[in-house]
Length: 412
Image (cartoon, rainbow, N blue to C red; front, side):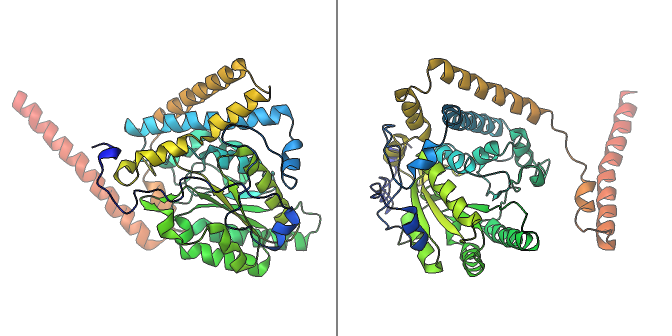
């Protein structure tokens, strides 16, 4: 049954499929004192890829050179190619699950590239493009989804935390880390100022962890940027069922600034996140960013969005594709040509080939390591359970030996 043939439901009409009008220009100083109006949204690139000026946020983009601007596209396009390859690997049985990011590249690359080395980022489980901007080996991301590791990388090397599968738990971890940064700077004023970015989705915003994290962040003026990628669907629940007001409006209830940005406009996302991180690093406290974006595919590869989402809604958002929009801008501005885009496509294919080979050669971990890592020190109960498990495994070997001997006797 196609999406068009699905029975009528209360969710048929996408209430927020069309983005609100871009906000009237105002100053970043005003943003520091109150949340933007619910109808306002920062946008620098319109859906046709035309660049518009904003007195508060355009300066953050004007400071970027041509190579940096081309790098934004490279990151988005390569991340999308990686996403397609990971999806294919899961469909072929090489990954247990995959969480696609297609459609959200602008929000992820724009924010990731705004962070500095001293900043620490807490992802959910979909921030693959953010990981790319932080210099992770993307093959390491797949270790978790293949089941060979609980993580796959050392977060201390890139200040990019391990993926969090428990919905919204990372927001509390992020605020705690940000409060630690405060104390480090107080103990040693020469410490390089840093901030934290806590990524979460609109679905996670309904969790109590997000509320508690924002309460603590506001109370302690913690240097944390809450970055919500509002893709309008918490698996099968539309956003209008989750919240009766725009997410950005929640910030004023906690007493810190909130700002809504077109999440499919990579330049606006980069500018807004740069401003928010400066605000946090300078000791002015937290910021909430609501990036209005859309997941063009399934929530995970275990999901079928045609069961709850109409094809017409998806088509509305495909016209807002962050990658296509930014390509149009680069071409119209004379910043990139066919040769550049062909080179990027080749880089994406090269990465896809690399991660496929890496996945197929990943070694299965020793199950005994799972027992060894339950506690920080040896534990009698765990040792007893390991002994039982080893005996259980040995029973299969014994059974195979008996069956083999019987088969040999029969053949004789």
